[in-house]
Structures are given as structure tokens and as C-alpha cells.
Image 1 (cartoon, rainbow, N blue to C red):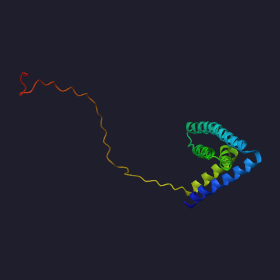
Image 2: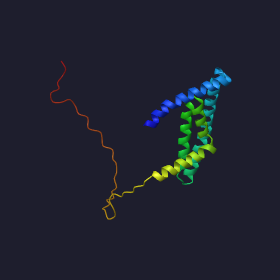
Image 3: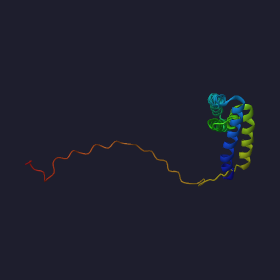
Image 4: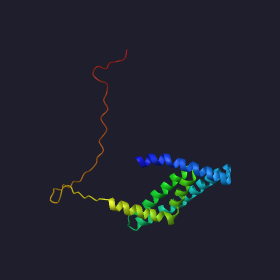
Length: 159
């Protein structure tokens, strides 16, 4: 929890300091344009990389493999998209780094190693051999409509 609060305080301060520095070097409007351009480039890269990861996952499933690496790649691409949506040069740089496969692969492998080390598998069986199996066939029949009833015994002529 402390880490989340620290990031929520530190990241905006760092982003503001970097933006001011970049704006002093190239100008305010140019810095804003650069942020917009990086975001648009990021959206395009997310689409391209996302489609590639989707195809790889589909190919893995068609080959009968679990698409574990593709799923982690998808998670990292989604994280990159979130980082690119946050305005700022530092988060944009981190997001772009996660989008590019040469930098995404080491992060993916680190996460897989870490999650595999912490993973536990539990198998439980319920019941067991020797139980009674009842096999039944059934047929669905439509019920006939209810008969139409005439006026009741208290009904008489109107009026």
C-alpha cells in the first residue's frame, strides 16, 4: 500500500520536473506536441503488437499448447497502454519500452519466473471409483393445451 501511495506522489512530481526541463529545451508547444505524438505512436504500437500477440496465442492454442507467454505479453501490452495514457515523458518511455519486444521479453521472463516460483498447485478429488452410475434416457413431449372452459355456473345473461 505504501508503494502505491509513494508512486501516486512521486510519479507526478517527476513527470512535472521532466516536462519543465523538456519545455525549456524545445519549447512548451513543442513539448506538448511531442507528448501527443508519443501517445499516438503508442496507440499504433499497441494495436500492432496486440494483434501479433493475439495471433501467437491463437496459434499456440491451435497447436494444443497453453498460451502462457502470449497471455503475459498481452498483460504487458495492456500495462504499456495504461502508461501511455498517463500524460508525461517518463511514463511514456516506460510504456514504449514495454511495447517493444526486445525490452518486453526480459520483463515477461522475469514475471514468469517469479510467478512460477510462488505458484502452488492443489489437486483435490471428490468421490472415487465404485460409485453407482445411473443411466437414463428421456423423451420430451409437448403437453396438450388445456381444454377451453365455458362460462361458469354463476354466469348468466348480461343485464
